[in-house]
Each structure stands twice: as structure tokens, then as C-alpha cells.
Image (cartoon, one colour):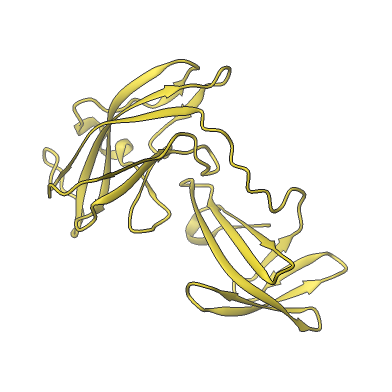
Length: 218
């Protein structure tokens, strides 16, 4: 595992290496709470050098291993990875929020606001219910994500444009058993139409059920 600060965001990167010469990597952006997975293969190049290849992009690189410090170094990004307990666990935490999609619409403008070129506003009305028994859920504009085009996801624009919504979903602690309903706005590509909506926790793990839907109205 290592932490880096690419583009100003704090990233947590975790590699899991397997004996069958495959690896997986989970990148968590701890600033915007998005998460992305990568896959590839590795092989021993000798002299504590390990050759790495990404399956999707087919890009490759050579990592250096320091057996004294038990560290793996990526010279391209100049990142040092440290072994940590619990690596390789794929168990996801149980969702603590029940998410319901009440309505959705895609619009080219909201009052006097227009999205950037090639984008449209996607406005969803949702109901959230904290189904946890003891802990509150801290909700803000970065807690609700929408996924499209196999991207890691984007968070809402309620912080900047929530005042223009008729019934914005209010931020704050959602107590156990509490139900909250309101509008959430995203800026999505104009030609996108298939989406996945979800809530996430502070590390980007799913905090709710996933809702898949399509919009073909615009």
C-alpha cells in the first residue's frame, strides 16, 4: 500500500499479488471518494526486479523490491509501497443506507445555470433511509455518486447548485431509522444514458444498494 497526492487529491493505492502471477490494484481517491480497480500480471525479472503489465492498457513497468525494508518501489511514479496487514481482503462492508430512486430527468439548463459544453444536468429525486441500528451516516455532496461509461463515478454538484433545486437533499448526519428525501444534481455527458446511482462511505466503499437506470429523454 502507498499514499500519493496526484492532482492534489489524496490517493490510497493497494496492490495484491497472487502466486498465479496475477495482481489487482484498488485506487481510492480519499478526497472525492471514488474507487477504481486495475488488473494485470507480474513476473520475476531477477535481481529483485519485477515486471508488471496492465491487462487493459497493455502498458508495463518494472518495480524494484527491497528485501531489507520489505518495500516495493515504482520508479515511474516514484512511489514506495509498504506491506500491511489485511491485504487481499475483498469483503465489502454491509450497506447502511437504503436508497430509492423516485424520479429522474435530464435537462440542458437549470434556471440561469448551464453545464459545460458536451454536458447536461441529470437531476434525480431520491429517498435515503438509514437502516443501521446504532450509527449515523454523514451525508454531503460527495456521498452520492453516479457511474456511467465504465468510469469510477462522479459526485453530485449539490454544493454548488443545490440552491437552484426545488427540493435539494439536505446534508448532515442521517440518524439510525431516519428517512430523508430530496433532489440531487449531476453534470453528465450529453450522450450518456445508462447510469448506476449509489451512496458511498468515507473510503469510497458502497454504503447503499446500487440503482441502475436509463434516461433517453434528451
